[in-house]
Image 1 (cartoon, helix red, strand yellow):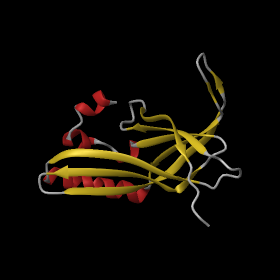
Image 2 (cartoon, rainbow, N blue to C red; image 1 turned 120 degrees about the horizontal axis):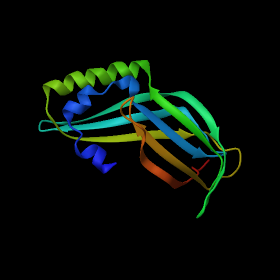
Image 3 (cartoon, rainbow, N blue to C red; image 1 turned 135 degrees about the vertical axis):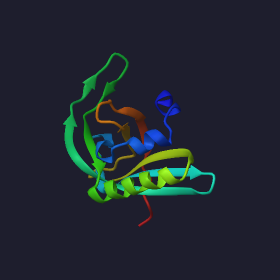
Image 4 (tube, rainbow, N blue to C red; image 1 turned 135 degrees about the horizontal axis):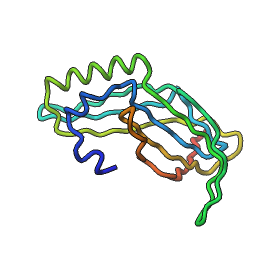
Length: 156
C-alpha cells in the first residue's frame, strides 16, 4: 500500500475516474453496515489551506462470503459490500479534481467511514476489513485487514 501511494501525486489524482473509485468492506456476520452512514472522506493540503471533502457511497453489490478454514486460523462467514460514489458524489469529486488543477496540493489523506446496524444479539466487537480500488484495471488494495472493533453502547 505504501508503494502504491509513494508515487501518487496531484497529476495521478486528477486522472482518476471517480466512477471507478470503489470501496469493498468485509464485516463478520451477523454485523451489517448502514449504507446510508457510509462515505469516503478525502483531505487535501496545499501551501494555502487544508480542506476536507466527504462523498456519499452507495452499495453496488452485497454478498455473503462463506467461512474459511485456514492453517493458522479460521475466518467466519462475512458479508462483502462493494460501494461506489453516488452520482452526486461523482459530480462533487470531479469539481475537486478541477480545483486541484488550479492549486498544487502538498498532501492527501483518505478515510472510509461506516456505521453499523443495531445487532440482533449483544455483540461485544465487530471484525472488518476495508479495501480500496482506484483504477478499473487494477485490484483492490487493503486499508484495514481483519481489524477487531470494540462496540461501546451509549447510555439509554
